[in-house]
Image 1 (cartoon, rainbow, N blue to C red):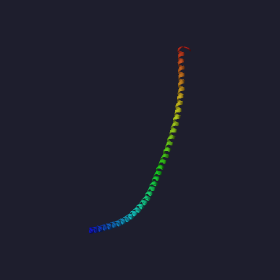
Image 2: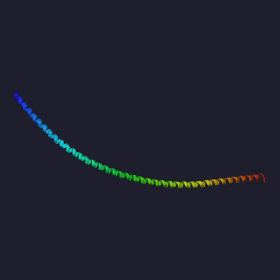
Image 3: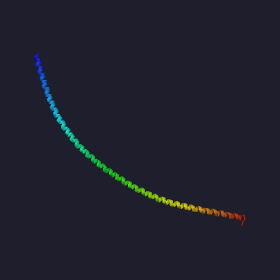
Image 4: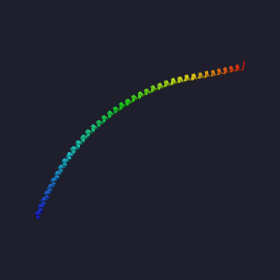
Length: 142
């Protein structure tokens, strides 16, 4: 039994040395991994900083381009608006001319209708007188 105890004791000592060796290896791996993680983190931060700076510059460039395009479109709209206003003013002038011409012609028609009424009245009076003359002549009033 002492033999077995000695064997067991040596096996436990061997296992303890293996566990100690594994702990040392784990510490070394952890230190190495922590160093690799720190390097990767710094590289990622550097890349993110570079990319974010590039993204900000790209965003600024896009903003400037869009502002220029918007200004160009605004200028085109303003020029089209001024052209349309000029055309509307021309149409307004034409309408005023047509209105004044129509008013003048309507006044002429009113005047000619007034003259026609007077002439018509004179014709009616003349016909009435003619009928009275014929009636007086037929009745031998004179």
